[in-house]
Image (cartoon, rainbow, N blue to C red):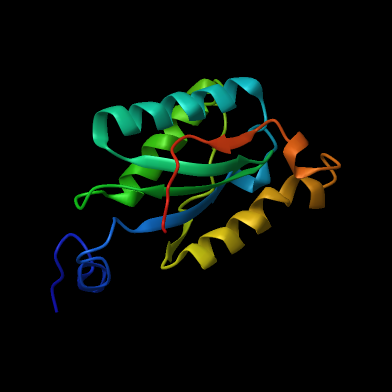
Length: 156
C-alpha cells in the first residue's frame, strides 16, 4: 500500500478541526549537556518565531533541558515534522557553535506523539515543565529560565 505525504488517519481525525499538535522530544548525542544556555534559548526562540512568520508553523510550550528539548508544535497540512525538527537541530547547534566536524551534536532521530485532546496536552505539559525540578536544577518549575511559549496553541 502506498501512502501520500500525510498518513490517511490524520485527514480523518482532523478533517474539520484545527491542525494536529505534536509533542516532540529530541536529545543531544550521548546526552551531552550543552543546551541549557542563553544563546541556545535565543536561537530556539528566533527559529520558532521565524517558523511562525514565514511557514505558519506554531511552536507552543517548550522546555530546553541540558541534554534534551521538549516542545509542542503544529503546522499547515503540508508540514513535514521530520524536516522541521532537523532544521531546528541545525539552528540550535549553530547557535551553540557545535559542528559535526568537532563532535556529533545530536542523537539520531526524535520522539513524536500526536496529541488528540487538551487533556493529553495539559498532562504532557504538567510532566515536562517539572523536568528541571526532578533533575534537581531548580526548586520550582517557574524558576527554570529555558522554557516558555512562543505561540498559544489552544485545543479548546
